[in-house]
Length: 376
Image (cartoon, rainbow, N blue to C red; front, side, top):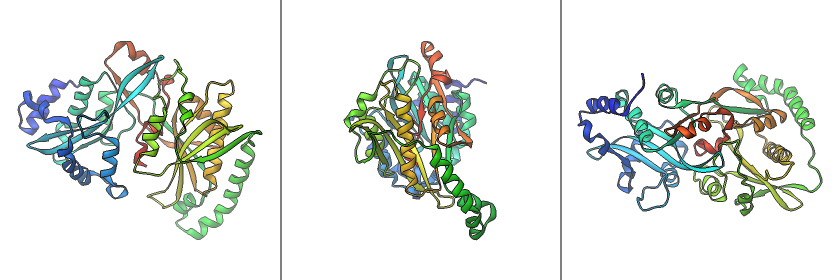
């Protein structure tokens, strides 16, 4: 059954005992006066509230000032000044068929448990579909998947690739013994090290990798319009916001140079797993000079050297998530294997002229930067 805003409005209004004609008045972008109520809602519902400072996160990702130029907004549904639900919206620029178009990514959907069954989450999402011509969502929970799959066009799932560096934690989970797992891990770790050593090429003369503390100006020159891809342009402004201003994590920024000229930049992080406290590496994003004939080689060198750099910190594994055939091939050559789970991806547009592009799996380019990287 196709869900319509009008039908769902009547259903939600009945569940909340409010007038269907005034339900839209309950839903609007959060302002400064909503901030404390929003923090309270998120603290009550979030399972990971102890992992970060939610105040800093919200102030970084969303604007609570109507006069600010930032168009990322946290929308809240309130009755009598009591916040019952929220939905985050990030405004992004998409490059589609050599044109820059405005799109919106929906995330951070939360609804009070006592009203979770009345369709308020679906109603808020339908309201966004009615308001914005292009929407996409780069993930879903087990509980939200049935709803989102009805409201959006479901694309192929984003794939996650993993490079195993040390087998200790996997074997420990299997045998439940640190002694046995460490003994069995020794030959496996040695074989992994030998394989990866001979798989990776030595950099040709003139190439060097340098840690960076900021996003270089030159990244703006890497942007080349590609009619065969749909992507968010990686401008210096965007990358600064995503990786430098982000209060959640400290990211590793690496620059690849050829004869002292910047050819690529990667963004990674390290963290300890919440499950087994093992160190994990993540390659979040990368940009490189794709204007030269050797662009594939440049990307390969950049990602290879990023992996080698992360390996010096002795992680148990390195992972990445990518929605791009060419990049998937590079990671496969570097010894990465597909993990046993994928991550959902949904799109929607009311513009019939864009449908043939937006709903084409082969055109999209996504990395973790396009997902909720800040949730790491």
